Image (cartoon, rainbow, N blue to C red; front, side):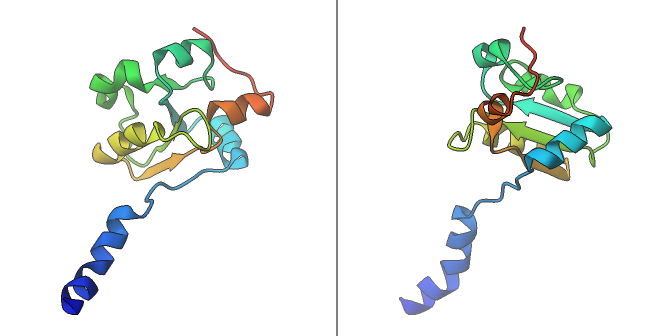
Length: 125
């Protein structure tokens, strides 16, 4: 039994560890300023219409056709976000980008609540 638990332990650790790479507020601001970014808002359509980071794509509404909306360049920075530090809705958007072959995918853990808390501009529609 010791052999089995020792042999499989790394696989269990990998399965439970977080593989979502974060981006800081400063890094996000710089990326937005550069224009080389695609933002995925994973908060859902109602929240998206109330407030989203300018330029963000409503992932819930466009999930089925996200491959046609994201940039063709698979090295483009893709940033997924949701409500805030305790929200995990971003994972679906993040994972979708990874599955499509994007190699520079990050998570903005402050989410829309952090963005609003910093008194940043938002779009509404």
